Length: 462
Image (cartoon, rainbow, N blue to C red):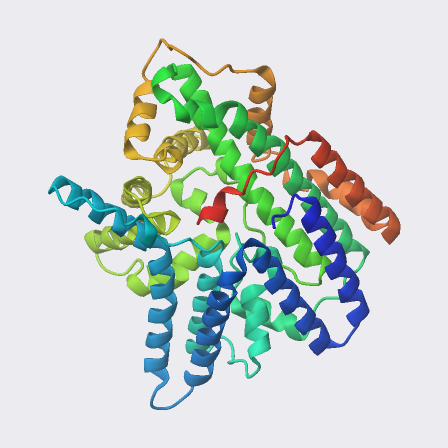
């Protein structure tokens, strides 16, 4: 079940009705949201409900054990190993299996082990990272362990951000379980604006760019000219931004309608004037998670330049491998790490006017999106070669509507953030039936403008 479908619209309408019926009865409301979240996940594959329950049990049990005077440190270590180990098995087993098959094939010992391949559970990275957040926040004394397993279960399974984030910290979410915000007209108006913006980003901008330009160009990069390939790369930069920030907008808006406030997950990343600034603006919940639970524990900015560079490279390489088990993701992460280290050695962002620095950073980020988007290193190499080619054998047509969508996606990164504030304020003064009508009309318009079928969100695969 994904957001921009009639199935989800009916599901969420039922959740809102049950939420209203629960009223102020906190335990009943909590049980309803847990049941709804597990039903949401079961719609994808019910077999993995046990996996999510296992992750929840590990986090909850570790939280209680962490305050034991003798076994606290051991409990943290065991919990982290179990959580990260579970994630690693599902994300990387197939990669190592394929690598072993290829190696044996070179030795004349080819075997067909396709039957051993594992299905990657959707959203596993996100709910495992939230479980790690809970364990680490309890270990650091930032929150107290929860006696009720239902509290931890709701935190880990909450369906608006279950399968693709944003990654919500336990210290931010758990207090809201105790004191959910009363949903007033202002919150509903903000939620409507976020949901409709997310639907437009995903169903119109991202999907049309993917089908009309990005997918065909990356399917046959050897047939593209430099102009066409450059347009496709820029289109992918817009596509992945609109796809993922669109999901985040919808998730944050849905959570608001249920009385939970999440921090924003994107902050106009393509206007950043440095790579460091880009990572402070892109997928903020993951970037801050990596900083607090990986970069700083590895040593952070301590030590000399070589040590700092090694920590940055290790952190970003692991971040790349988190996105996928493949050499292209490893190269993408390592290249970002090298860029961040070089930038630090040079004393920050390039010594250029802000617009020129932003253009330089955007160009670098777009080039690094090539190995991220390409299915393998051969395709990535062909795409880089196409950028230097003046002729094309079968170029993808650069239709004006597609170029307009690229321009619109980039404009989203430069428009003042307050541009929609008057409209939200006007909607906040409207009665709730009018707000519901605006949401319904906007949703129908997005469905009408969208292509047939439902393209999955890009980050579902991570």
